[in-house]
Length: 263
Image (cartoon, rainbow, N blue to C red; front, side, top):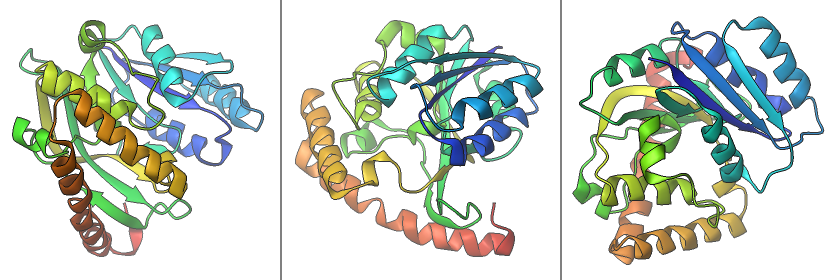
């Protein structure tokens, strides 16, 4: 099974090397890596060139202006040739070197169309300090109606899912991933396996939390997605917001249980 990983980049030289290294360390090597750069002006492209020179799997790179992260991801997904497609954002890390091996193990049968797992959010500068632990739990249609979604950075989907249901709707600036997940699960009946392990480590301070303006926008776009797909919007938004509180509490517990070494 060939696994395609898609990464969108733009002026992310401070975090990109660690992300790329987490992929290069994977034990499963039948992969291709598609990197879509938005014409970076910092050291991003130099870091990518150094990475390409040292890995022994195929890396496809395009660097040109785009219309945002979802446009870049759509470009990348179109270029993939693998059986399975996963995302590795330029701020993120795979939690350990066996993540892709585990994904392939789960998706080798025809029982599932994709899979997802847990995610931890860490301090942007000190990635050993966990600030939030998102234990996703198993999918159910009832949970989706209450605003739940799997942690999108941990989702690995068979390429056939994108071929059948399409790509990200770029009219959404922040919530296109939520729209996509609701589309394939609530409307499309895609079968996802839950892996009760941390798949992805994400630095805190992402696009949706950068400013009050962005937080308002993501709230508005989530509401639009819910109305579009026939979800009970007000109840779902309330439950979705409240459900995040325990994630910050469990994040502190997780950090303490790991000791000073962190992840």
